[in-house]
Amino acid sequence: MATFFGEVISVYSRAVEEDDYDNTEEENEEDVQIRREIEEKREVHVRWCQVVSKALESSENLNRIHLIIAVGQNAAGFISAHVLSAADWAQVGWVALWNERSHGSKRPDTAPLPGEPGCVLYQQDSCPSVLICQCTGYVAEDQLFQWAERVLGSVQKRGLSVTVLSDCPLAEYKSPDYMTSSGAPFLRALKTSMHVGTLPCPLLELPNIITGLPAAVLSHCQVHRIPAVLFQCFTDVIHPDSVTMETYKPILSSLSASVKLEASPSTEILQRLTRINDSQSNIYT
Amino acid sequence: MFVSTEDTLPSFKGFTLIMPAVSVGNVGQLAADLLISTLSMPRAGHFHTDCLIPMAGSNPYVAAAEEAGQPSTNAEVYSRSDLKLAVLQIRTPVLQTKIKSFRKLLVSWIKSSAFSRTVLLSSSQAYQRDDQQLQGTALRYLLSPSLEEQVGEALRQLGWTQLERVSAFPGISDSEQRLYIPGGGITKGLYMDCCTEHLPMAVVLLFCSEGDNVPDAFALCNHLNDWLILVEKPAQGPAPWRIPPSWRLLFGSGIPPLLF
View 1 (cartoon, chains in turn yellow, cyan):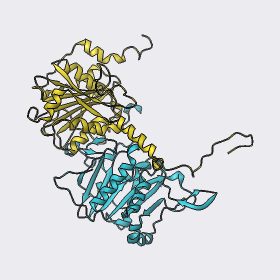
View 2 (tube, rainbow over the protein chains, first blue to last red; view 1 turned 45 degrees about the horizontal axis):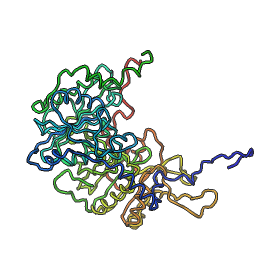
View 3 (tube, helix red, strand yellow; view 1 turned 180 degrees about the vertical axis):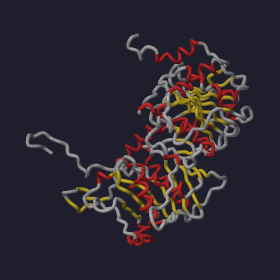
View 4 (tube, each protein chain N blue to C red; view 1 turned 90 degrees about the vertical axis):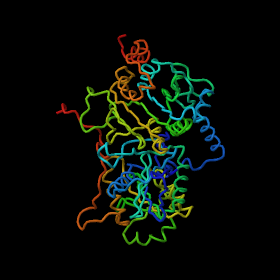
């Protein structure tokens, strides 16, 4: 619409305002092809080392696998500092995926470099029944379902049990009482119906929910009747920190036979993991 | 994909399916929660699909976490065979790129389960009502041709208002009328799919805005109850809907006591 002075003003019109989802209706062949190519590009792939992939296929060698999935900076940091450094864990595979926020891990034939965000799988020679998946990369919403399906699908379902470690800001924890930071960090658990055994922390109270990769893994396990338990750590520190990492310790005590825990990791490792919040956050240094 | 909680697949033949459309104010989802909670419907299974954003939580209909048993996921089916009723609750939005496949999945599941009719609870942006829609109640309905034959007359007798078609070009020409449900999510698409597939579907929707939509959910449930009579309506006062424990703290945690 042009005004008296000649400038053009766009007028809001109900007639051209379509339903939110209507623009996906009219697709031509080219659109379909583009969509398909994007989907292919965003596909999630699990890469195992050859020796392990053979072992995983034949159920004889590994018939009771315990998969530990650590999601987020704190859980991944805990795995690095307290678990991987305590014994001879070897990298046996990785999850290759591409999205807007993680370009790096889409190199299907090379594993993520140390320090690079990504999902890496570890195993111990002396105790092959425990697998650790350390996930520091960003997995997009549309890839979560496939991630759970591909990673858990690549392991023998019979005898499989899953433990998920994850973290979340305290601000997202809902409780009728006012939350002071003195109680943080603390753990809450959520388990599938097939999971048996006692838990080292209370269950997640209503109306709190879990989202993201941990939710995708737990949903997959619930639907496919895989015993799984998820531990969510609520922390009041934005960056990864050693106190938050310590909260995960009691969880792995039930696995003490197969997973050796480093009680007090070297300061060097901890410093490397928590360095992120050193200088940038302070204008005086 | 429907995954049963039990080892055997439950039969939904002849059941009425009630499901929400993820739409403005989440009114349909809140109403579905009220139905499941009030009728104490047990869970029949999960609706496991890659079209929805993943989510997990404790059982939303049991207050104590220790008694919750199974965790809940982003889409679940609750049913009661004595009422011949199934409710599909959807708890997360549909992924933008998977809307079409989600609709296809729903249609094929509705078909294969042989539901006698499907009721889609939905909502639409209140601010987009046109002049004729502004008159009277905020509740509307739509029926697919195959259900129109069965219940069209009954709904008219109840005094229900059908959703008015709006002009495609208002103010210019009123000759072209179209169905327009802004903020209704998959409502229009799924309704159209059911019409072309000859599936009996009713859309019951409410014009509303984002905010505290709990009263809207009650309004939608009361309206639906006038037709389906799911709960006994007392002689005086409203139907006794039971709010699920998961509705606690809708507006966040407790406030710091030092504030006062």
